[in-house]
Image (cartoon, rainbow, N blue to C red; front, top):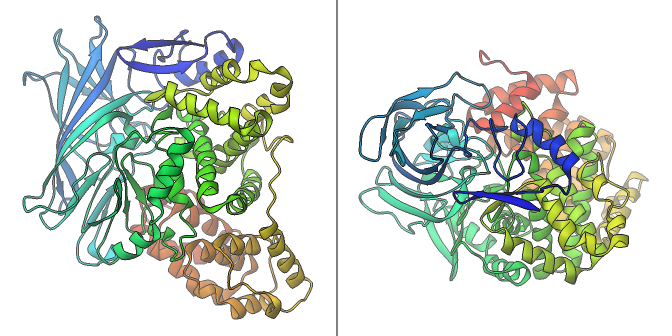
Length: 632
């Protein structure tokens, strides 16, 4: 493997180990013939930046949060390193109001905002003087800031104060900060954020643990991160410690529940460190956001953003915490160099998550998770094009969000699990630990990982290497025949109960009082076809599923209800779709509704009410499903 290091930016790619594959995938990715090193030449796939000419190294933010105008206003100062002949600094921006650009001495610089691109934004090109080493961009966000959601008090749990949060992944950092919005570039940053004095600001950086009277908060992130990990939340937040280096932020009425739910966080950190080395971000805190947060969690370093839908009251959904914690190694520490390589973030993280859960809760527990994930992956693949089921994606002219499917997560996980099975856990763990150490705070391509894998593991045993079936996993569709077998005696018992029910056995014989979330999900997913309304009524009457408080169980029950056209569950369906905005739950339910004429009508009625409460990421997904027009 060869690599090129330019001004501290390091992207690992193969040299001539895979000349054909590298050419095949890198050529459309970078828009120009690739060089033999790590930096892309010419236009990037999802960025206007040209880091091969001038690469940003540090960002200083100075912003005022104005809830009345719903704007972030202030400046971003970007320090960069450049080639001697570089005349321009190219940045990403999308919908920003650029007011002025100056250099480190305060002298104004010429700049140009490019033509609008619906996906990539306008781009910002700054003309550099011979001695320019930093630029200060004065700007304000606009209504086009898709990363930012402004919530009214009644959209929060407390109902008294407004709330703001950002979601920068995958390419939305540019909608609130001018930056080089590509995972190939890593920056350190500091920030000064001014908010109303009654609110607290937190970021993916060092954080305060209590409010101050001035409303001015200062932050610092010393470790270099990609722009998609820039994050800000502002609201009526309180903090509670979970241990020496972990804690949770939440609205006051949510905090006790969150503190109880996340009590095992310190144990998770310790388990992770025993597996793959020290935690390198100093603290690991969480912030529970309002229900409109579009994802389960976001791995913003030092401060995981989490949905309140995981607060099940029985710690049954804390695998999400293990997942976001695992990102502190896979994703945050070693990052996918492009969004075509997304599986390098998520497949590794699911594998790591599973190992953490096994270490804390046992193999039986982690195998239930794995079996559910495999079943979901196979089902999801039925709705994807064959090319989208490769681990190595092709997202040319597409939104990177299109690649955020179970393929990157679960096919990636089972590929790594296959490697563990073939080479043994001891050898595989040693490889992974070395991988995280060697490439820490760097970006990695799929081809670069394969070259490293071959050199350090596969080439040392050709017979074992052949049994892995690497090409089928990475550059082929579907789930390969070499996929590991997952066994779960617990879920096998549940399958028996579901089968007996279908054959007419009374539900009174089902003892479900000790079932975990995973038992329930497997039970509900065992009904592959719609059930008669009479049978649905029996299930609902016996177990009170329409009144279920666990969001994961309720989602699967509502999905079965839509497919079975069980209308008594529809009031619960409407509440669920209007009270939370997690895309994982929204998309399957709306997709199921629109398969019938009456369901489509109900979907549009609910969405008309719910849409204003959703984050723009969720809005975009459901807009596409319903063919929603802005005039509606």
